[in-house]
Length: 194
Image (cartoon, rainbow, N blue to C red):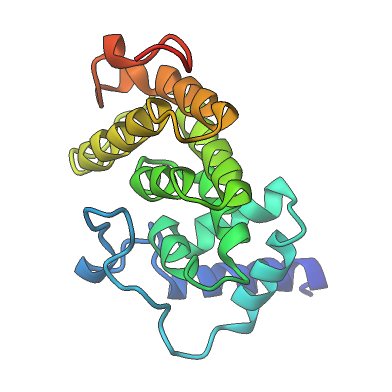
């Protein structure tokens, strides 16, 4: 006999298998030069109730629920769904659980934006991705790493941005320095360094 918890786990697994496992949903989901997904709006198809439940649970901010959402939806889908203002904060927090650098350009772009709350969440997600242990990455991942590092470097050197945001970008760049996206000597020593 299957208990209610087992049934929920099975339903989540089925829903996750219906969405892309890595979030790469073809050429339309690749990041553009501006860090946004190539598709600017989420798919119009009705959403699976299990995915709706995952989004609702993740909105509570619980790390387990955010990680589950990231694993189920995938990073590219989270970027796509971030155009929905109601889901954007959840998507930005869930991207912290990405296993690769795919969302890095998008998060760096958000961190450079005008919305302070979103920038703070985006930089926290970048730091979480950067703090993960180094692992073999796909060659395609290098493009996102380089683009994200360039955007974070620009943010760290922008005197028009708040000092706290610039310092968070510098911390993230220091964590990413050994990943090969930029020369570690380019990372500023502080917000006054250029």
